[in-house]
Length: 62
Image (tube, rainbow, N blue to C red):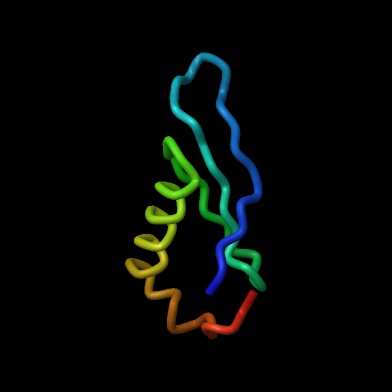
């Protein structure tokens, strides 16, 4: 399972950094608030486990 960074951005007037990650080989996108890409990946992986998406995506995708 591979997560690809799509975008890193900030909204004007808001201090947090938003990072968009895509689950490779799918159209599933995670949009998270994080200080770093590593933190964003950790949050996306938690969401994947919480939503039980890992059983839908083969390990070799991406």
